[in-house]
Length: 248
Image (cartoon, rainbow, N blue to C red; front, top):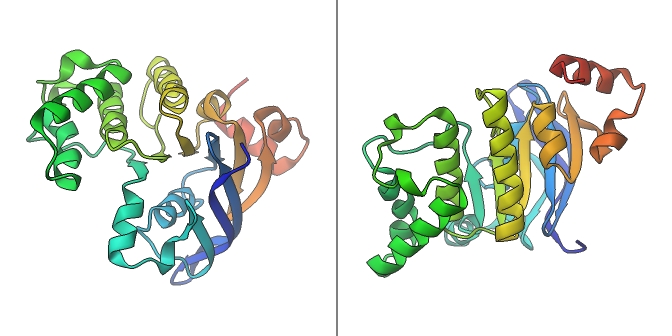
């Protein structure tokens, strides 16, 4: 895993007097799952929105798949975004479309000349990958929270991105469903050869999915390594976060 697909150096972002990111350095190598762990409001989601080009940084460099994101024109940024899948916290499905139509939508929008048979085949592949092949004709309102998360992941996967950005993938789910989503994130990494940043405040998610864990506090990274390296410490900042999760 030598090739870097994301390389961020000295990243700053403020909103007025609220200094959200204060000198962030992070890299993600090809095929690696990196977990950014922190309490709500520490700037985790702002970080991945900058990576996806949804927000502009105030300072620093953000290099994604060999391109500086904030230097790209609108056409180049759109092309880059097709390679970067963003899994929103609440799935962001269209309520008026069936599951199948939700999955077909990004294909038809981004590849207008695609044949219907190919759309059907690709929809079937990603639905099978997330274990929900039988839901193709259901409406989002008929799905559980965990199923909506899975369909959201499937819709992101359908364009076969190189990078997956997960925003709080286990938020609001029961422990069993959380484990299923964590397993799915690992399966996506294995099956589709993705590199990922997983934003979470859930220690179980971090432990189960992260090849590398980065702990964020007040806009800075305070510790990084694998799970054991990060949490085998007497550092009060890290212990405080561990206790906050109530994980033994």
